[in-house]
Image (cartoon, rainbow, N blue to C red; front, side):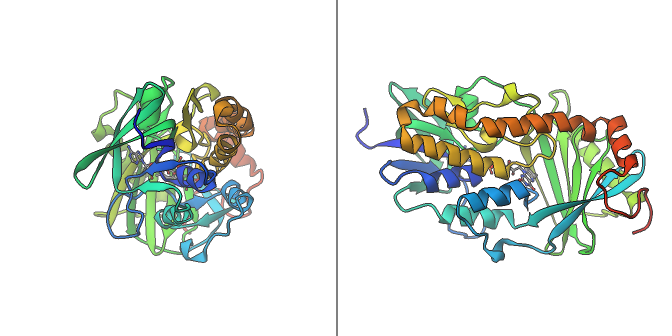
Length: 366
Ligand SMILES: Cc1cc2nc3c(=O)[nH]c(=O)nc-3n(C[C@H](O)[C@H](O)[C@H](O)COP(=O)(O)OP(=O)(O)OC[C@H]3O[C@@H](n4cnc5c(N)ncnc54)[C@H](O)[C@@H]3O)c2cc1C
């Protein structure tokens, strides 16, 4: 057995991993690995994200005793969502309160709150993890070299493409590929989301970020779909948005893509097994109706920290019990999903005007 063995190794320092690392007891010997540059220097990996903090995430921050620095906010803030059904031309505004943030700065801020007792390996990509008797050996590349750390317990906080989940947990989860393109913007546009079953059985969005107009969409990741057909669907969205007054011409300022998990059933959520734990999106804790995942990442990390601090030997069972409210929340979102994603039901809801704000209900000039 290696002499320098950690109690816990965390793979991934997004909202879930950073919150967990912050909340674990300082008596535990903890190592954390993340591919980002956490010193804020230029370059390196940045998580593609819409960067909207939903009320659930705002509440989770309050419950963690955190105030959001205003430097993380970007222009404009969001009070309503313009909802568009591109096939029928229906248009509605719904009042919603999201904080529009710079997601990368948010990640760096959460990581900056991790106490010095945690050994952080940033700019490090975890390549493989093997079980060796009573501990795990993690191999990662950093600065062109391979290194290893060993730990008795392993936490996968490594998001939708989780290596930890792929290595140790057989449960599959439905995933989508998200594409975002950034164009020179029109800052007066409200946040928009669009539905079009010809393009995706999920949804797309239009956001403003500090003078950029961002077009994004979550597209199905069916095994038989080529990269070209995914790209073609994204381009088709630009065309379908034209009657709503949007013009996405030319080469974007930049573009990015990432996977997002969207559980199709509660059975696709896995919190881990034995000494392997999953938090946040690695566990599949994402709203299947909105793809909102930051609140689940923060909350699941808090639950896991509490049980690992209290009784590591029985943590798996207690973690599963304490996450039950999050599973219930996802169950309710699964029930809500057909009203958003079944075209006939969605159109019925939009036509009814239920809970919508006044104003236009059909395509027209802004
Ligand atoms: C395009 C897009 C838009 C989204 N918009 C929103 C939104 O507006 N609001 C919202 O609430 N949610 C949104 N989500 C979902 C949200 O981003 C995630 O659910 C949330 O980030 C999950 O947090 P996490 O900490 O579990 O995982 P992540 O944020 O994905 O963090 C995982 C971390 O693990 C690291 N990592 C992964 N693999 C390795 C490895 N092998 N070695 C080292 N490091 C590794 C990565 O660097 C990353 O920092 C969006 C997702 C996508 C893809």
